[in-house]
Amino acid sequence: VLSLGDWSKRKGNCSSAAPSREGGGDPEAMTTPAGSGTGFGSVSWWGLSPALDLQAESPPVDPDLREDTEHTTPELDVLLVGSVDGRHLLRTLARAALWPRRRLHFYVLENNLEAVARHMLIFSLALEEPEKMGLQERSETFLEVWGNALLRPQVAAFVRAQADRLARLVPEPHRLAEQLPWLSLSALKFRERDALEAVFRFWAGGEKGPEVFPMSRLWDSRLRHYLGSRYDARRGVSDWDLHMKLHDRGARVIHTREFRRWRDTGVAFELRDSSAYHVPNRTLASGRLLSHHGERVAARGYWGDVATGPFVAFGIEADDESLLRTSNGQPVKTASEITQHNVTELFREVAAWGRPTANHGTPEQVHGEGPGTAPSPEFTVHFLPLGSAQTLHHKSCYEGRFQLLYVACGMVHLLSPDLGACVAPGGHLIVELARYLVDLRQEQLQGFSARVGELARAAGFTPQNQDRPSETFARFYKSGDSACLRSHAAVQSTTPPPGALVPPSVQPATPPPDALVPPLEARNPPPEGLTQPSEGKTPPSERLKLPSESRASLSEVQAPSGFLCAVACESLGHTWILK
Image 1: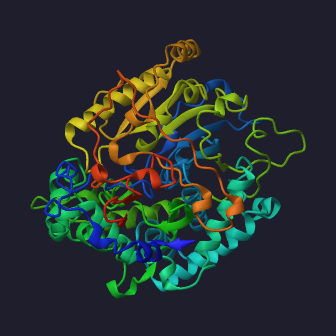
Image 2: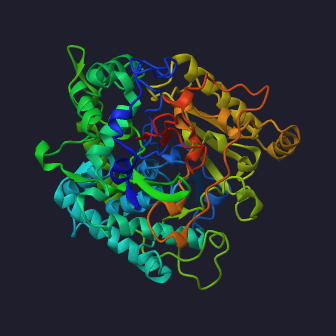
C-alpha cells in the first residue's frame, strides 16, 4: 500500500499539476469563488450541522408503555445514515437524564469503514474510566483526534494504544462484548470486520515511518487542487468563505484566525503551542485502489473536507447563552472555545449518567430476549453493513422498527420508499441540509432543500408543521397509511438516481476495503457505479465540474463513481493530480 507521497513520486509532482486558467485549464472549472467546488471532498470526517438530542426529535413514549415501566423499559430505536462522527449519539447520551428512562438502540450505517473505526475510537474515549483519564484530558484528546490533521505526540500515543486494543478485540466477539458492552459488530460481514481490523492495525503503527502518511504534504496538495489558480490568494479566499458564507449562514462565532489556521495547516483546535502539533493524524486517512498501465495499486491519502471545517458540530451553538455573547458586534468567544466547553460538558454528563455493564444479543435478537437473558445495557451502538440501506427492509427485524431516522446531507440519495419502510408509523425523519457547504450558492441550497422534500414525500413522509422552519434540518413524520404510499411510490418509480440527489460536492463515497491496508484477501468489492440522472430528473443545481475534467479521463481510477476528485489523470502529459 503506497501513500500518496510515494504515488506522486511515481507519477510526478502533484502540486505542480494543479490546473490554472493561465496554464490552459478549463475556464469553467472554477465554478465558485473558492475554487473547484469540491471542498468537502469525497470522505466525511465531521458533520455539517450542530449536534442533536435524538430523544427530543423522536416521538414521545407510548402512554400504554409508561404504565408498564415496572416490568418493561421502553425502547428507542434510531437509524442514523451517515452521521459520521457520533456527535448526535454523544449529545443524546448526555441529555438522557432529562427524559423518562428508555433503552436506546442506535443503528449506524456509514459508507466507509474508516468512519466506523472513528466511531469506535471516539466512543471508547468518551466512555473511558475517569480513573484512567481525567475530564479535561479526555475532552482535549477528543478535539485533537476528531478535528486536527496533526496531533501532539502524547495524543498520537493514545491513538496507537487504543487502536492496538481495538484491533485485538474486533476478531474476538466474546472479549469485545466483555470490554465494550455498548458495541455490537454482529451485523457486519466477515470481510468488513477483517478490513476494520486492518484499519486499526494501520492506526496502531503497523507501518512505521513518517512517509507512510505525510499529512502536511497531503493537506497542501489537496488544498492546491481545490483552489487551483487562487492558491496564492488562499488567505483572501478563506476570508471570503468565512465572512460571506459561514457568517451569513449563522456561524458568526468562527474567528478569522482559527479558520485561516485550519485552512492552511488542518489544525482546527490549537490547545497548546503550535510547535507541539507535528504527528500526522492517521484516523483521517482513507484508501483507494488505483490502476495504472494495468497495475492495481492501493493508495492511501486525505480526501476529506478543506472548505468548511469541524467548527459547526459543537462550536456554533451552546446551552450557556453567555458563550454566544457579543461585544461591539463581535463574539467574545471563538468557535474553538465554545467547542471545548460543549465537549467537556458532554463528557461530564455522560460520565454522570453511567456506563453500560452488559451486552447480549445481535441486532436481530434485541427484540426477542429470551428468559434468563441478562439485562441489556442502557444503550447499544449497532453498526450495519456498508451499502445495506436499500436491503434493510427485507429483514423482518428491521421493517417498521425505527422510531427515528436521521439522514446526512451526503447520503440523501439513499432516502427511498425501501428505507422509509424501516420506520414505524408515526416515526420521525430528520434530514441534514447543506446549509454550511460553502461551495454551494443560495439557489443551489434552495434546490437541494426542495429535492429533499420530494424524496421524503416519495418515501412516505409528511413535513412537520413548524412556525419557523429550520435551515439546517428538514423534519418529517410518517403517517399511518405510509405502507400504501410506499407501494404506490415503488410502482411509479419516483426515486431519482443518486447523481440528482446530493449537492455536487458531497457525492457519496464508499472506499473499497481492499484500498485501505493489506491484506487484500479481506477486500470488499466496490459498490456499483452511480448512474447519471435520467431525463426529466433535474438535479437541484448545476453540476460543479472537476478542474481537469475537460481534458482528463477518470476511467483509469478503479473506484466507485461517487468519489469526487479522487485522482485525475492528465491524458496529455501523463501527470497524476492527487488531492
